[in-house]
Image 1 (tube, rainbow, N blue to C red):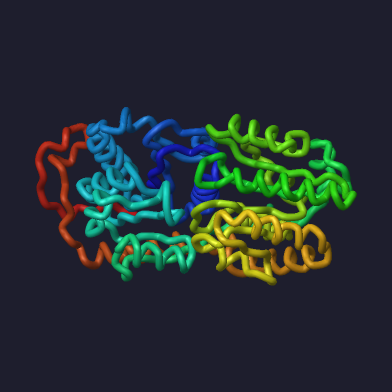
Image 2 (image 1 turned 90 degrees about the horizontal axis):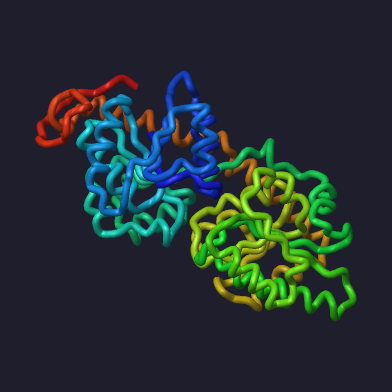
Length: 398
């Protein structure tokens, strides 16, 4: 059971969708539990596997513990993976423990909000068999700053389908958006949330546009893929900057693999990240990346090899790095080619799926061998309320 808040169209949610779809069905039967609404991706997956939703009525709805306990017992769950921090990480692990679930794991996807781990979640560290970081630097962050036991911290790199994200012709999307063939295009793929710092991207777009106009070059265009509550604010900012006509807010799109080849450079301007999927998708399509030096990004965006880095919130650095690539097609091509090779070698979807399969099986086998007593609520019947606690060594089959 993979436990999330919801399944909107976003990087972490897309990763999860790809993961559960690829798990070996002869060994695993994945299910999704959404504390709130299923979201677009949850609704999509509901046609392929069990998706449970609307489990949490409000932030202080303590009945969530009984609902999750009953769900885990009814579904005979052998492993629970909480995805992200917050309520799902707390209630999911606690319910899994009192339900006698053999394997309890927490996968985290960033080094700050929304995946900062609070005091209450740290209290449940002894109940957790594994914490998953998405890159080596992220795993180090979980051990050093979140204080998780190093022996429980594992790295499973984010992975994408390199057979879907491939270099291709960009003309169809350019025609759709009305972008001239000879115009430079910079893209960003990120939910429209504060930590993604789209303000820096738009401020850089204004400067690059001014530079291109002075030099008599075709006016550059800027593509923003992603949606969120800040869309109207950011659209207004683009208008204030005088770049509204060349800034394309595309919202959530299912054809990202077709959009990326229409760009010359993909940017990442976030205040914090772990290992964002967007840069893996861009590199897999042969598009170099200009990114803030945050989280584990430098493991993927390697200066001079797959892209360029700038210091977080450094507008001058972002603009200078982007201009250098836009003005050098040969360098862009080389970095894009090397970027795709890097993703194929280190960040494929198959490698990520295999990492989860191997870790779940290893932890399950350890639990079977150790047969540590688990805490069971009440009787075996999932319909009864968790009013009393008793020790049990009952395990369901994998």
